Structure formats: C-alpha cells, structure tokens
Image (cartoon, rainbow, N blue to C red; front, side):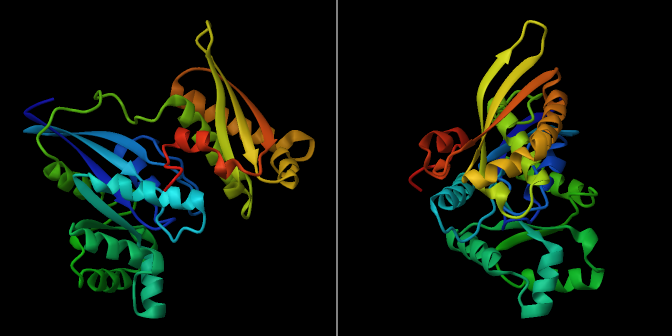
Length: 313
C-alpha cells in the first residue's frame, strides 16, 4: 500500500433484475451477494468490500448492494425497499444501475427508457438533491446504435452526473467505474480489515447461499415463498463446520416440491450449497437442511432482525 488512504460507501440502487448483485461481485472481485436470473433475489443490504491501488493512494470502497426497488405490496416488500433507501442515505456516492437491454426495449416500445419502477427511483434521487452515477449494465446484449440512443435520452435529465456503460458479466467498462469511485471516496482510514470482502456474518452468508440454490432449483413463484434460517453452527475439532438450516415454506403443498421425489430435490440443493460454502469458508462443510411449514414467516420479527430489515417499515 502506498500514499494516502481513502475509504467510503457506494450505494448501488436499481429496479429488480438490473444486475446489481452481479455488478457488485465483479467490482469486489469475489462473490459477496447471491445472484439468480430472477428479480428480487436480494432481500437485505449486502456490503461488499473492495481494495483498489493507485500510485499515490490506496482506496477501500464499500459497495452497499440493495434490494431491488419496486412498488411494495406487503410488509416484507416494504421492509426491503426501505432497506434499499436506507443504504443510500449516508453513502458517499450513489450508483443507479439500469439494465441497458430492457431500457432499449422500453424506449422502442414506449418512447421512455425507464419503466415505472426505474422512473420512480430516478424521481426519488432527483428529489433528494443528489446526483447519481448512471451505470448501464448488460451492454453486451444491446446493439450499439440502440445503446447510444438510450444513453442520450437518459442523459437529457439532471439526475446523473456521469454515465458508464458496462457488462458485469464480461467485465467490460468496470475499470472506468473503479477509477471514478476511487477519486470520489474521501480521505479516511479503512473501516474494515484490508483482507475482508464482506461484513456479512457467516450464519447469514450460509443461509443466503442455500437460498440462492433454492432460486436456481425451483420454478415459478415458489422461491419467493421460501426463507432460510441458519439455526446452528458448530466448529468441529477436525477443522470442519456443521451447519443446520431450516427452509421455511408458506404452505404444506410447497413442502414436497422442495423435498422432491425421494428427497432428491433437497439433496441436490444441499449438495450445491455445501460445495459453495466449503469453497467460501475454506474448510469442509457438513450441511443439514430441514423443511418446515410456516405460513407467517413474513411476520417473524426474528427473521427481519437477522436480515437487518425494519419490521415496522
């Protein structure tokens, strides 16, 4: 490390499925947030910690990956949206992430590159008096002419100070984002040890990894009706970890779907989660999953507390 030290927070905002979590993972250089092709995968604030070097300074950037902002219809959704805005309140910089492909399609169809959710976010950013960095993600899916037209329309407003075109999947354009954020962070000691990549407790990390595997394995709306809680964690003398988790489902009819015929589905989910956790934790993992019916898990204050969500939002 050389020169001065800088450190600050960057709030990553956007509508569901804009690719925020994939982008944060790419900027951090390590998986800190679960991802799936489905919207609203992220349920809580995830802080990814990145260390960047320049000849005259070393910068710690703490990315706050937020739940997708949308129009909430129930308590759980209200809590997620409130968490997203809370993540932006005191951040040193705000990034608004937009799916460039969807924005181009929306522009062609309606004459406006912003759908209702994104329009609402931009309005709120403008209302706050802050400017955001516009990050157009998934540019690898868009024809250059459509991308330029979309960008021109978006920059016609006053909500964004700068625009970046990136592909979190391929890495295109990410260095420019990193360089800009390095310059924006205030002079400060580091807030986390340089080797940390996230401040997420291991128990919550383990639950999130299992939930990701649920999203990948189950179809339609069932993953949204599930929650995962790490009930037990035991560090064994041989260096391994024994983890016990409960998968909550909302209805009795969901239970056999998660279990699968002969328990095949739950075994596959457990095997995938165990393999990833072993890699992330750097030790053998013994993972035990149980499925319980809890029709009111969305009203469980303990789960909200574990996820860092405000029950009364």
